Amino acid sequence: MTDEELWWLLPEALRDEIDTLVAEGRHVLAVHVLREKSGLTPVPGITAGVGLIDYRSRAARQYGEPMGTIRQVQITFDCAEPERVARFWCEVLGYVVPPAPAGFDSWADFDRSLPPERRGAAFACVDPTGAGPRLYFQRVPEGKVVKNRVHLDVRAGTGLVGAERLAALEAERDRLIPLGAVCERVLYADGENESCIVMQDVEGNEFCLD
Image (cartoon, rainbow, N blue to C red; front, side, top):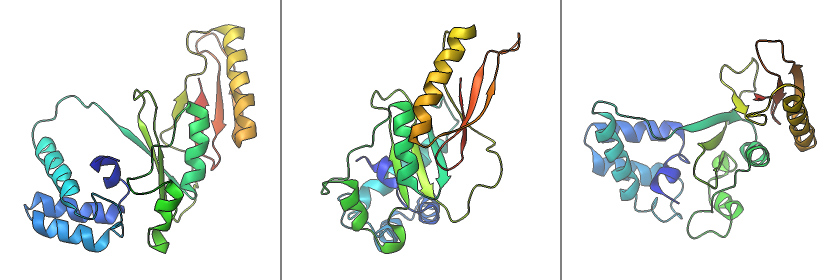
């Protein structure tokens, strides 16, 4: 596991605290805070802390300069059961769960090494080809109450039109429903836009088959 991947497993408040210390040039204190508050000391790299602080220092230097081309993004989901939602999206997109951190046979073993309040708090999945963005799932106390302002379009009908496109979208819908997805509505071609199907994942997050 890379320093970047380990970094995103830390609680948001701790990440903010460390970034503030790094920005102030207080790197030694940042390492101390990381060791004291991470709760991840069994993991090589976190125990020393230096690798992560160096990673954040490089990021601070990079983003303190004029921005160039953005090369990568990560998409983050707030949810109640991170692993359940992550594994659903693995099935949707053909993504995989990355290997567990060094020293652990599985993510379940890693999870058991965490303090009780952090167990099951986060999960992630990745495109095995490296082309698509990493998806990160973090547990939050509140439930979903309104429509998402951002959603994913799953391109199941790319290059197809008319009845052939609709058939491909419906076939994908029928594959995902047994996995826990919900079909919200079908938007049929209207002469201006092609068909798409509005879906919900296992926790009600909207996405489209497009």
